[in-house]
Length: 46
Image (tube, rainbow, N blue to C red; front, side, top):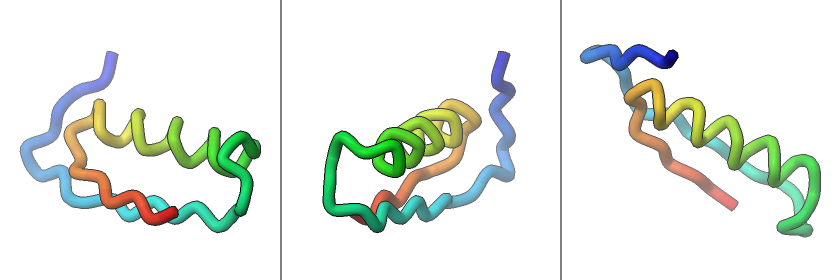
């Protein structure tokens, strides 16, 4: 179970792929979701 850290910061997730259905895009969305669940603020650049 993810724990929330009061010191969590901002995570920058960058997607550098032209297809929204690519493995790269899927991995970036998953990483953003996990980081957000851990209490981080997410900046997603696509």
